[in-house]
Length: 153
Image (cartoon, rainbow, N blue to C red; front, side, top):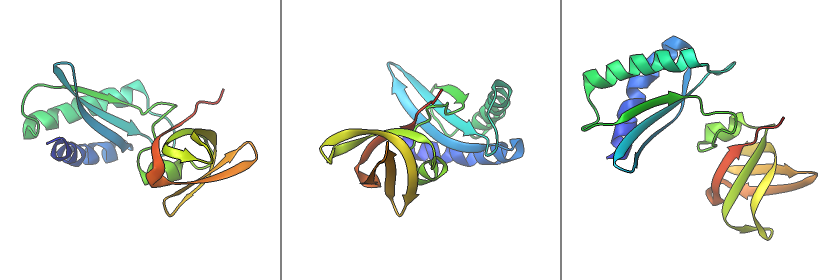
């Protein structure tokens, strides 16, 4: 059910986001306790997402969700930016983060470790290339358990 819900939400959100000069970064539909949450993460190709962007998209998307009713039952809609330490889940997320500091964990040890933090040098053909303070490591995408950008102050 969750995949169908996300596809319907993404289809409804796409034209709204294009009109606002924004793009869909990710969606989640999860149950926490007794409540369901529909989370829509939005981004701006050039620049940052602000509270007004989130508010406008939330209002417009809520109206579309009420009209088309792709989700049976109650849920909470949350629209936000993916944040400074945004998760990297899709190929496009990795490609966009090239040159940035990232942290990732792997399902199995690579070179004796499962946690890596460094500069994402490249992402090509499903291969993550990291610069770990001068040491270079290549990690196949399918071995990445979780990845996120790191806020550098």
